[in-house]
Length: 314
Image (cartoon, rainbow, N blue to C red; front, side):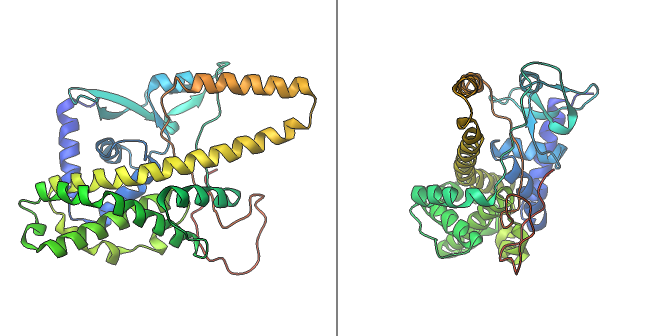
């Protein structure tokens, strides 16, 4: 049975109240949001409330477009429509199966691997004006996040001031409010980015780093925080996605360049056709992690690894 609009509103309101000031639950939410960064904060809340384990999600129509079917009896994840007047539904990849359509395509999750690292950081550090070549992988990411937060902070602080009434922040002076907001946003964005790029955030960010979150104890302030975190994290991760896919397309093309011209031309024609079709398709919101400290061929490396990462998806 489909969820009603009133029930969806209640779910969203209840979760907002539960997350407000709750650092443990907030970190769990950030893990989910990091994997679904193409969604808005309100959509991320709804997905977390209904399917916190969702990974790659799309509408019924989009799954059909790429040659997958939604299994009968699957329960859709309810999201509010863009104008907020109704509901729309998406389905997780676990609710789908591979169809027989000629349009069948491989699932699109990008995965960060060692071969992507240099190009990804070159791009991000160029975009955000940082230089972390001598730093560890996590510290380079933190530097990029810090620069992104600084760019957005004046506007963000002004938004927070409009929603401060009734919160614990209201009783603090401006210096402490600025410090707590900056800390909450920076650490939350880092947590999201670490999650999606394959670094276990719990190795670098723990409960103490979110100890000030209890001051954001109203749904209104939580909304300001959540929207800001997603607004900052999503462009970083979209840039990473573009670089990873660019490199992977290049690696796919190289072996074919060594074959005869007919095969190479057919490959390029097919690639252009798929590219043109893709431009008309909505994004599939996906999740994928690869251990960046391991070699791409899966061989065991010797010695101590500086960065411990999460297990890769199969």
